[in-house]
Length: 341
Image (cartoon, rainbow, N blue to C red):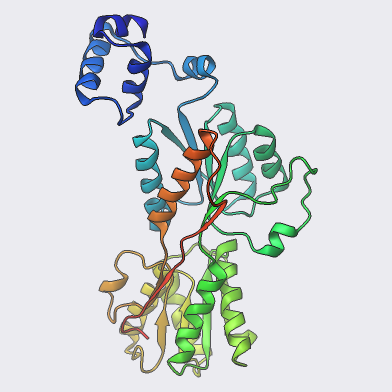
């Protein structure tokens, strides 16, 4: 790197920042440094850089799935933010499996990341201990802790307790309750909650649905349709057919994710069932294509890209040793009413 700096007529630190892609470096200098690096055949060694600076130039992001647009949008926003600050990203996919998440955490910590983004707050005791003992800054995505969660005793000792984790997201329970209240306001009384995957965020939406129905004295356990299989259009269509066959008095179905609801709308069209007059259909996340369905899908719009960007900004602050103004950032949600309800 010193050879490149000498040949380019700049400092070694400028070479380092230019090769990391930091936007603060003058574009002409970046071009010059890259040209000299190519000529001399210089390739930075990230391991050596981490040893020399005691700080790596990469961050780790752990997400449950790549097949879900929700996490793709989040990931892209976070990567753009890190890239602008000169950080590379290493990604791990947990497949909603705590054991797999723990193994990925161990592997990623071997690379000494500058920081980590990790989805959710539901982690095994071993994973929590790894995070606490690593001293690597960590921000949690999508979930926000409830007061009862913040006050619960942790299996970690007093030094390691994560009593106030850094996190960016929205309250899934509130979103589930809000959509259910929307359907009740439309005059619906037999509202099914149909869910797949059954990860903790889905179960929080279920709790919001239960809360709204109980407040309005409409709760009935037979209205819960829970399937642990992965969420998909095909499963949504199948669940819709089953619900309409076994529970003909149902007048609304709240699906935990838009792909299920989209599949249900296609099934309703195939079966010639009138939506929303015979049965209303609602989804969650406002995924691509929901506004193009027939009828267009009513759903909960979630701020997934904003979560990725804000969480990345918070992690960058922690990496720099700065304390964020807020430890928990609630970006909210929005009920998008369309013709399916």
